[in-house]
Length: 262
Ligand SMILES: [Zn+2]
Image 1: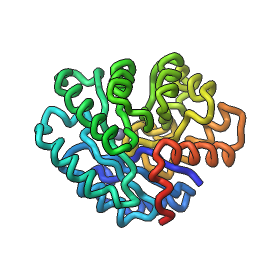
Image 2: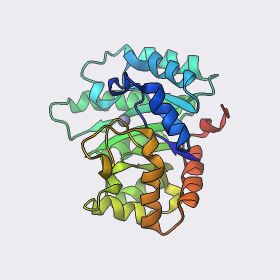
Image 3: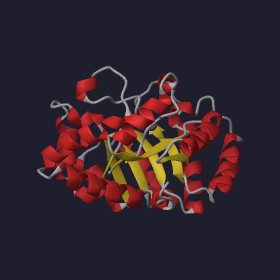
């Protein structure tokens, strides 16, 4: 049993075959798929998709790359949507939120404004945060500390060992996926190898971040077992042990994953 803790199954890349992609993941042993939202426009989409897809769950949030077109009252909409989702066992947390200092042209203050406001919502409702961290490790961590958020996932983690430890000390789990399948990705491989297994969750970020064998192709959630098998090899454990461990870690990072068995 594997868990994909980060999959944009609602993305347009899956319009032609979304159900088949989800079924293939299920058949491959990926029994949980977490679908984070990125903007107000897809809150209802990810919820509906999580409801009609076996094993799927959803998170609600505004992604840093979507802050340029987000409006301030989207935060009020988000609050109402969170309140309306608290009784929904398929709702697992706040995300995807965070800071991106890699993509040029983003307004730093605006990103920070949306990130902080959403961390306050996470804190207020006692929900974990699924964080986008790109060239922003220290600032994302500072936000978590400042707002008292102590659970969730730093997705597609790509920082130093020291930064990784700081996230773990804050209570966060670190998401690893297709990047670690590239032999030249030395830093990520070293992290995935040396961090305590308890710190690690698996993810695809599909349709993005394809593994080495799908280079420049569309990524899909059924790749989790193969990515996990690469990680198991790096760590010298069996794929079964890694599947069990990382699935337990996903439930620790996103406790609402345990609310329903459907
Ligand atoms: Zn994402």
